[in-house]
Length: 284
Ligand code: KIV
Image (cartoon, rainbow, N blue to C red; front, side, top):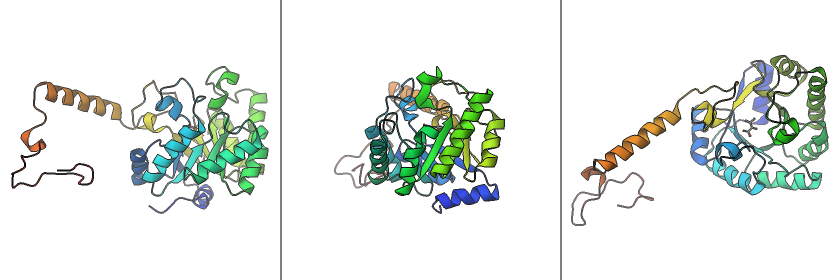
């Protein structure tokens, strides 16, 4: 797949061709995204909930984001690799944020970072983009502000909230973001921001009129541990397939139908070479 760059995404906005973005937390998922032609792979801090089983994303550390970003980097071929800066990795000081963003690029192999926040982080965004670290701004519902918002709630429904989100979008664009991620806001607000923004907007729970859409991998393939939010759609049922495979395995083992002779290694003096799938890992 031809590598997706920031220029590719900007051309998509100009031509009106929707952008696709999906989360990935490991190498096999990164390979699936690459094969399916998705534009952006996001190592989201949602991994704190989806992979680690937490209630929110707040406990995710920079080291954990680095660990998952390296895995995704190894499996990815084509999509742009974007990584979330986790809670408190950029809110304490611009200097710390700058250093941590640099680590995600330098040590993790990410091509861009995503930061939750509006006007209050514009200074940092400006600093990052000036030092050649591309940034996506994340506004609307900001999961790292879950306690401040009193839960995961739709934002921008009243006039002051709406005006604040528009002001945040403008401040981030001015600071140099190459895209805006809009989460859980009314479609009319997403439409307004998409119209005013020269950079692509990518929505999640923001209606159909953004320049692209993003979903969490586990929600999209039907492997989510919890009920889906209103905006998410399961396009497959990986969970059901996995449960079926596990129950077939358990049954085959308990009835001694697995492994068969063909699935067992022959004795040493056999002339038949052992069947191996991956010679470097599974020695005959
Ligand atoms: O962490 C995440 O997965 C996100 C979503 C918006 C996709 O930021």
